[in-house]
Length: 340
Length: 265
Image (cartoon, rainbow over all chains, first blue to last red; front, side, top):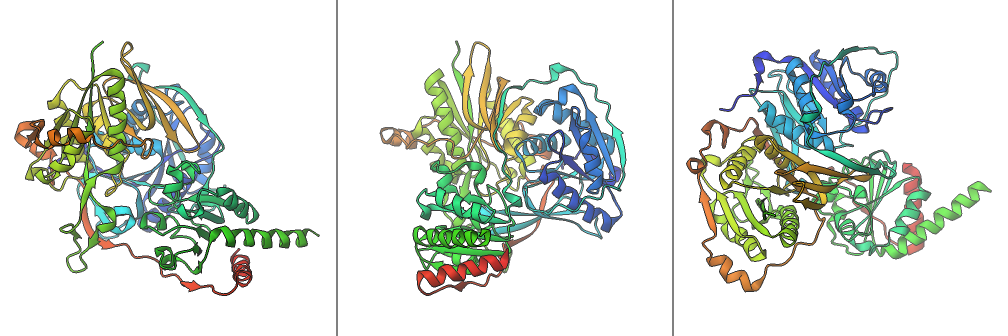
């Protein structure tokens, strides 16, 4: 049997979280992983540790402690200024071998997934991708990862007995972030990294980031499927009246009616709004997992047999092109009254 | 300049909508389920075929699985690929991503003189997306993931790609050889060329290799090479919803909807 570079006997009972973010703030998914990690560590009396790699990102440290980290391993180097798979895998590997954690969690972001996939092979350990829940069993002290497959229709529980660290990635929005407590303090462990520029083979030529939207935090989600016939203006108007965001199923995204960053579901974003309004959406599993955490689901579809009605609290059989304009009109009228 | 040799990794997957879990055994019921080439892999194949049109060269299809995958893989020949390598051995069964990426990397080493390895973004059944970076690590080469466009500069011997990230994109370069994962739905895969169909299905251009052929380390393949174990399997429970139908005139429905929204916010 294949052995990981260190095993159960050498593990330091702790959960590590890979920290991502801008120079000023931790990414939402990092805060969510810290919150979940804190919950597990409190139950086990384990240490919760953050791994921060970058250049001049010391501003994240205070925020990490405030959200519940006990310790931050901090790799600061000019060669880490931009994410490159070579430098980041090298640095994370060094840190993991020095800290020998039981569990290492990463956000299932583009860079998090790249790093996790590469690091798991380097460490010869297992990796559970896109977990929908995590739990360390109190008796065996093993991480149980819940993952969904086949478009969300099947749930599997996955464990590893002998390999460490137990690695897992989690999509943004699956867990909820906690409240920061800026009186909390922690310990910073600087990482000594000894690597040369020759290591880095990948070259970043250009990066263009538009307005980053965070659908996971929107209080209202107005989502459109095939049935809206590409008319997302109507959905945008409704969303803005309700202080929410617009999302979509895969077909309108594939057809170019709306950006891929707004795709909801298994291969998109998992949202947890107060209200999700699903317009002209048939209700395939891989979409429905994206609104499963909504407090209330409203579905509008002209087909009374549409599966989406199985997953909705309030169901309206009708044409979205008539119902939405009528709703928009009523909302605008009310707003005018309240302004007056 | 020399021609390009691209390996496209292809997985054959069950159609997701047909999968059920047997409530008694907790195992996946695969017997009556139809299979297909993993749709994201078709985007990878299309991108590879487009590169072949520009640079000339050849495309090798690499897959791991039983002989029953053959007809699916031959479709790739009819689309313009040149040869199929199927890694098939009982000893490969039960592989998680660590064992899968090791086995595929052994296949790539044996195929030899490869410039680029193309993968789909993720599979529709497992959806881990971990094969491309894992493969790159076993092969000790670079990786560019989630690409919507790719080009190759033979004089500098690099690949350049446009990578989709949240809210934007990056342009990246890596030296060849390297691994590329192609963003799902970033292109429209071509149909097979029906003139090639009978050739593709008779063709001798299919090689099957077992674990011995690959010189694979028995500790690194199949169940033995897989750290993770599935301990439980279930059909996903979905939260019970009210499923209350709002009926009446459009005015009534709108008003009720408005009330519900205001109550919840």
